[in-house]
Length: 142
Image (cartoon, rainbow, N blue to C red; front, side, top):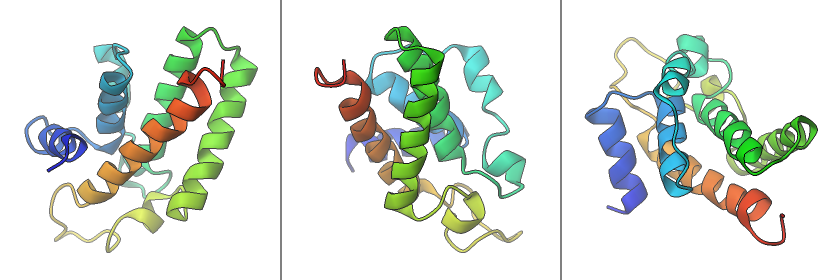
């Protein structure tokens, strides 16, 4: 297992985090930015809008992190909004949708096993890290 794979597995199975909280925690660790417990709590229902199958929690967690990290880097609200737009556009290009109902393997059924998006989460965390590295944390971005 890679470190991303191990960390995602741990957050899903040992802490019972959803995808949004897992994304926030992983990105915070990757970029050494503390995520407040209250922020993690705010993301509790952000897995397809509380299973409504709307915007994917992986996207929501990444967008929340972009706001936190970009503000810490001194970016304006307008810059953060543009960065979020670029992330959503890039995520859609890479994964085909922003919607949980489209991205979740097999859709939603009462018999679904827990954490069905674990593999997708690993890919999405790595994707978000690369996006942020290039867009916010590289010397060319500053």
